Length: 174
Image 1 (cartoon, rainbow, N blue to C red):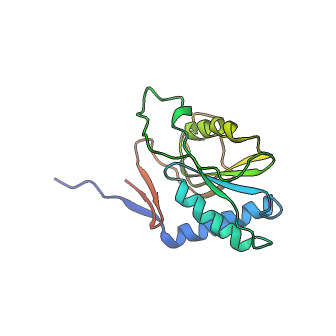
Image 2 (cartoon, rainbow, N blue to C red; image 1 turned 45 degrees about the vertical axis):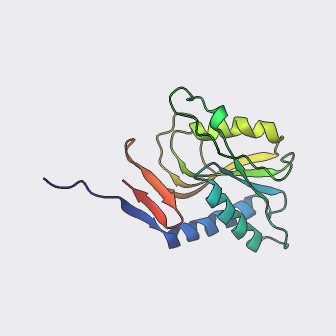
């Protein structure tokens, strides 16, 4: 009996690095620099990406000021709490005031849009940003809500039952 195929790589670590560099330049261009930009990663998958993106934004910024980076847990704002378990221990850490800032929400994969909807609701607890933009490494499609990313590493059409994994080593589909 043939074995099912294992995970296949669709982006390498170098592809991830190049995508983050491109996205950082797009963010700086859209926001006329990096002043007033705050990068917020969605727990869990978006946090390491947000940290990497903030490092690149700081490098390309007009001054030596570090771009602030935070983490946002949306567990209690989800609309599918009864369908999915809430994972305790995720941390929200927003290190700066968000009022009047351009907040770039960062996640690894955009699928149905429900996590982003929850993130928008959760952000309300931390101020009123001037704008909220969305950056993702992979956009799978399959949206259930009218949410579209501003910055995308790769559009990757998938079936609903495929599993997409994003790490610093690359993107795989199983």
